[in-house]
Amino acid sequence: MLELQDAYAGYGDGHALFGVSISVKPGEAVGILGRNGAGKSTTLKTIMGLVPLARGRLTFLDRDLAGMRTFERSRLGLGYVPEDRRIFPELTVRENLDTAVKPETDGTPWTLDRVFDLFPALGEMQKRAGGLLSGGEQQMLSIARTLMGNPRLLLLDEPSEGLAPLVIRLLRTQILRLKDEGITIMLCEQNLHFAMAICDRVYIIDTGQIGFAGSFEELESNPEVMRAHLTV
Ligand code: ATP
Image (tube, rainbow, N blue to C red):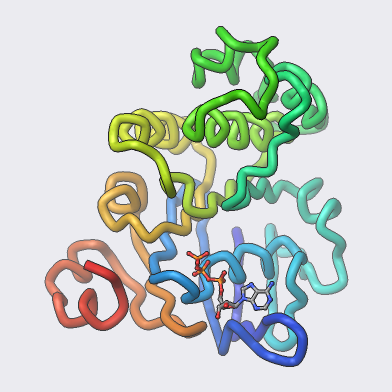
């Protein structure tokens, strides 16, 4: 579904990714783990066209994304939930969701009812300003907004960051429900256990290069790999 091959990308004259290759098949949940500053966000931004791909190749649904603008990538089915959540703080929950509606889709479209079924708390606070929500509620609103655009691949950038353990547990259940509904997921995380609960397999990125690719079983049987590339 998504193929990133030998990607070099970065900011200004410097690269933050050095030959990164990642593939995601339909229906999979793929984890990208790595420490602070390893290149996780840059990988997602490169996929979305927010950071230019200097070298390498990127395809989604067999389409070459080179030269394609961010909104065109999103129209093609890439749904990006950035690390900073980027909801509209002055708009209500309902208005935040209304701004994200994109009617065309191949499958069952996401509606307000469907989103509120997944995130009941949002249904109960439809009139509340986005800026007044808790961190966990804002994360859910950010995911809900992206869902309203009917993505085929959901790119999640550290959704568990800064949230309380109880909220992380709830979010994990909600993301697992999305996976059960057939949404393909790429999840960047520093939280190994959160990623393990959701993802089928994992890549580890370290200083802009892939340091490991495989199953969690393989990763767990390689403690030296974990020590070298992760904060564990
Ligand atoms: P974090 O968990 O801190 O978000 P990350 O794995 O997502 O970590 P990136 O944000 O992709 O890491 O950062 C990769 C490298 O690119 C780091 O060295 C970082 O300092 C650098 N970088 C990130 N954003 C910018 C920017 N806007 N301008 C210049 N360099 C940047």
